[in-house]
Every structure is written in C-alpha cells, then in structure tokens.
Image (tube, rainbow, N blue to C red; front, side):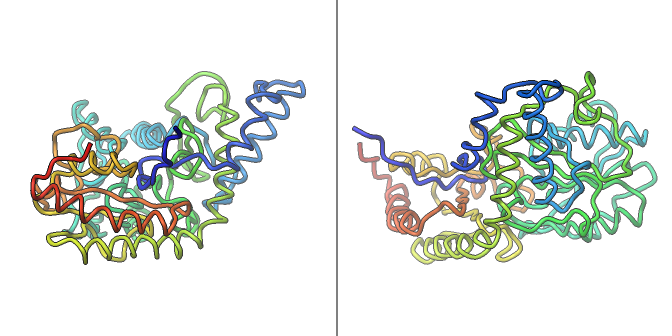
Length: 386
C-alpha cells in the first residue's frame, strides 16, 4: 500500500528539491564529477558549471558574480560575515536583534563568553524593528550590525534599507541574514546597500548543504576556512559542484516564481489564515499583518499545546512546525515570540504554517476542514483516533 503524499506546510524549515534542480545536478554526480580546479574535460565542465551557477545566484540578488562566495550553509555564511567583521576591524561590539535565527543568536551568545559585547535590540509587539534602535546602539567600538531581512518564525520583515543607510552614515558594516527571502521578496543588494548577505540553498528548493555569502566589492574580508585558493581564497575547500549547480538552477526558478509567490501563494496563505481565525475561537495571529513574507503564518490557539496539535496533524500527513526547526525538541518557549511579549503559555500554543508556490488550494481546503476539529478535540481532551 502506497504512503499518502503529505501536505507540506513547513517550507520555512526546508523546501523540497525542485525537479528541475535535481535534473540539473545529476550530470555533475555522474558524468562531470571532476574537481573544478582540474584541467581535463570532466573538471573543466564542473568548473564551467560553478561559474554559471555563480552568475545565476548573482542575478537573483542583483550582485556581481565576483561578489558571490559559495559556502556549506546559511549558518556558515552568517558566522563568516561576523567573524570577518570582528577580525578586520579589530572592534569587539556586535549589534543584532533579540529575534535572530540561532546562526546569529547563538553566535552572539558565544561571543559574549569570549569577552565581546553584544547589544540585543528589542522588537515591537508585532515583531517589527524600529531603525532608531539600531542608530542608538552603534558606538565607536561597533564592528558590525547584523539583522535578518525576514523572521523565520513569523515572517515579519525588517526595514533593511533604512538600517543599511544608518550603518553607512555611522561607518559600520551591515550584514543581512536573508535566508528566508529569495523567491518571496525581490532582492537587490545594490539598492539595499549592505556589506554582507547570507543565503541558504535548502530554503529555495535546492538541496541541503550549500549556501552563499555575498561580500560587497571593496569590503575587507577575513575567511573563516583556511586552506586552498577556492572561491578566490575566501572559502577554502573543494567546491560542492552538484549542490552549487542545484543552487544556481534554484536561483533561476526563484526569479521565475517571484510573482507567483507574491500573488498566488499570498492568496492561499491569506485564505488559510483568515479561514482558521474565523473558524476557531481563541485563535490569534502573531506578527504584523502585512509587513511579512507572503507565505508565512504564525498562529496561536488558546488552551492548546502546539506539540500535541502537531502530533495530531502528523497523523493526517500534514507537516507543520512550532517555529524554528533549529529549536525543535526544546522545552523553552520560542525566543522570538518571547521577545514579542508573548507569555510562555502563548508561545507554546503557537504553530507556524509556511507555504510555497507548490502548495495547492486543495491542500489548503483540507487543512481548513481538519484543523478546527483537531483543536476542538484537544480542548475537550478527546483521545486521538488510532
């Protein structure tokens, strides 16, 4: 008996690899398997494919291909940007926010154990950030400001252009964790004016294990990994050619699907969110109503433990999460929701539903029909149906 196809609503955690991406990768796993630094055909073909992927990623974010550094993941990209700033400036102060992904949040906590100082900027109740808080936090010892473009749990967008302008005025480097943004919001690093920007392949229908760090031309840079001369000496280690090729193809698809994500996916997200809020008493949205990604809903249901609800959803082959995949299993409430002023009980009653252009209206209708019943059963203490 075949396994039912799941309804996948956890795209902020990871995305399925697009068929076009997989097809683009296969030749570099089978036929053109050479080291891209080699001089023979199977190596030269691999090297040419990396060059093409670099151009595709650059086009996605409005960069020069020479500003693209391939990494292993978004966490490496984030860590590299911050270490580089600290090393090249010699300064020991980081400005970031209380709602960053663990790649920045945990890094900042680690820095504090090493004698660095971190200013953790608060957010408003709707999850938005006041740029004036950034300006007030910068001082002569500040090496870099790091802020996410879109929050991974709530989808709330930060005013990155305003923050970039403040950093430029104050002579401070600015790094953006843009990992949730590609294919959902247009990216133009020239218009934004950042010095560093991080991406992760598995958030835009490429495979896990590949990421990008944008380094603006003229920005002083200190690599995290030291070894060979790959990536022009900015990231040593033999390039992961198949995954880089996949990321390049995914970048092309992200540009092609951008309008669809902003219209069709947003419409499905709104149908799902509004339908659930209307049908379920004691339900609430976390985060700003409009200043957020078009695919993300953070919803809380009074009197319901998210962990119990997610188990019920899983029984019906519906995939969702309580928030960041990097904190799954933690007994602590979400640091993002806590920073927004939610109580521990409210945070633990929150689930995240994140769609993509692959989500169908039939799938949304299924969730709309099922979720209110599951919540009613949980509130009444009704045992799960086996």
